[in-house]
Image (cartoon, rainbow, N blue to C red):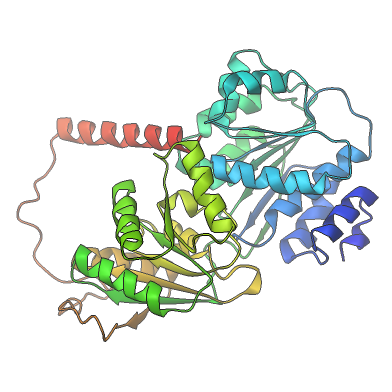
Length: 423
């Protein structure tokens, strides 16, 4: 019971109203350490309760001592949607207190945010890009900051936000407490931890690499893109689910699949980084309110978003990386509930699927839709790795140094666009 932690009565009242009574495993381990006001690195799978694990001790500490006058806590997140989600939880927890919680993210009126920061809110929930932009204008200082939290830190690093995060951390009170929260413990996390943390304690359990025992993972072979669309429509018509997320590897494919499903009468909406903020907010509101029950999205929706009632995840194409795959399927099977994750794989994706199965250290269950028979049944011969035997592509030539630089520059520009899209 949370009452055993002897939290401030205002927090216990809020937790009770939110129907949060028993702490999860990560909360049991992390909260006592966070209350000691030491630096802490928390690695745990999505849906394990990490948000409560840092918000409640943060608010309790603030309520237990006098305010220094300036902003006391800063929580950084990689996307506007995640920032809004954590802001909502923090506001609920603080509703019976006088603490002021504010949200700073891209896509909103910067002049209004400048004015907001002048009032020194107790807690700021923010995306790095917009916050750094405001700090460069001299909008605020964090000299009184007591706690800095980097939530979904692995995602921030994936999106190339490390320079912004480090620049913000440099402007914070050097005697602050720092918490780094993520679903993995990849090497880049350790690098940034060394730069901004002071001898952190580690809480690591049920990380993103652990097997999702409560998620049934299946693979269906497809002939081509058209075949995939028909399979997706069939699955959404015939599987039982409350809400479903269909993941696509690009914005263009997400739009195409979403239009196809809506044209065929399904209650679907689309979410990706190129949408204006009001359209992104509307897509999430429609799903939360049950006005649609299918979200077609890029990996923007794969990290951290807690959408209640998602019990079906469809990958219209295999994720490009193993951790991305795990984050996608982690949108279902949360809080001990059962979930189903189905991935469609065409001939060009076989080797990628085999690589991800090796990463997972498990095989996806093969499944066939009898009503939509396809010609592709997988490669005739496979290697010990699971990849297909076959001649190398004769059209694939070795890149020149100039071509490699051009390819790398394109990659950098793509990462910058992603960073801008996220907030």
